[in-house]
Amino acid sequence: MRSAGARTQLYLQVADKAWEIICSRKLQPHDPVPSEGELAKLCGVSRMTGKLALEHLVEQGLIYRLPRRGSFLAGKREETVDENAASAEQAAAAAARTAGKQIALILPHLSEYTSRIIAAVESEVRKHDLDLILQISKDKDDEDRGLQKLAAGGVGGVILFPQGRKTCSDQVLRLKLEQLPLVIIDRIFREVQIDCVYHDHYRGSYEMAQYLIGKGHREIGYTSNMSENITSREERYQGYIQALLDHGIPVRNEYIHFRSVPCDPGRINQSDPEQEQFIARSPQMTAVMCGDDHVAATTLFTALHMGIPVPDKLSIVGFSDIQLSALTPVPLTTVRQDTERLARSAVDLLMKRVNRSKEKQLTIKIQTAITERKSVLDRGVLL
Image 1: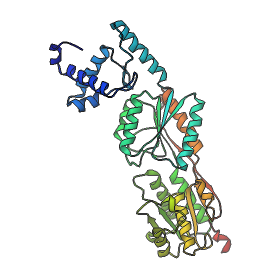
Image 2: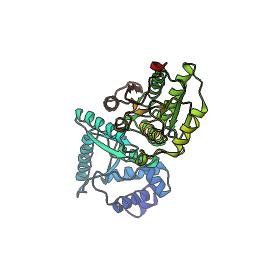
Image 3: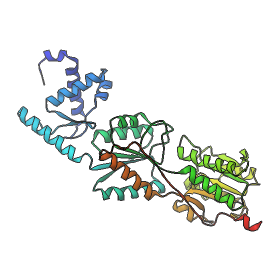
Image 4: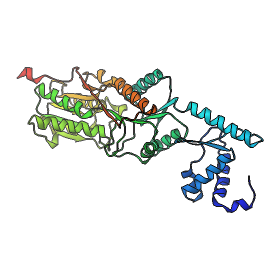
């Protein structure tokens, strides 16, 4: 690549090492190559040295760089410097044409709820003549790696449903600083200004508690999976508490239960020991609000196994309105989340950022609605 004397400069040694890494990974033209940060870690040098090494490879026509996107392997090397430069320029132009034509959606799991989000986002993305890249993150580290790879690959923007986090990840902050269009859905990070679209979990839970109070219930319990730094679960619980306080109803600790382990969807029609203990210790409860529909279905089946009629003795309500809620032995009254409106708002907001809107960061709350079925007794009629 160059004379032995030139190798005395550290960044040239790192450039050689970078090219060895690229060759060992068998990368194809236009694949992302190691970033300056990765080179710094692999070679034990500063980020500036890594940057100089990459710039040297650019000068040689081996790679090309795109602003805010990263560095990529150039096409096949030609015999002359002019041809090298032309090849790199063509590759950069091709990548630039691709950049912005693909939108990524990252989700923490695949469920009925997230499947509805996928279908709705895909439908909205098509309206903008864009392609959708879907990633399911295994954990927080996998989510960060996915974000980094997408940004390096020139994706036009990202819609992120984060793993359970209370604070924004370093990778999300990095992409924000690099001005990659990014919209968070179904979560909110209050410590940083970033575009968010999420259901108003607090209001939905508050209104459900009001609904039960309006049906004549005063002994209202609450049960949920642990919050695990998930803001949606925290807000649902806060909505329940505030509604009781606003209506002068005491908050009783014995009426509140957070599960030590999540509900098992595969055993949802069986009696659950945790829910059984919760119900048994508070026989005065006339209604139970559940943090989601899986917990509600588990609570319903447990009550029926215990010989407690629903809703005559115990009313049970859920949150999310998944398909299961309409198929339980007593169809569940629940809070419906409008995934179509969530997706439409998220894609519209993302496209504003793709088109370089100067509007300040937005937080869009999607309102929920109560879906009434058969799991709530109107005690007011009995009084």
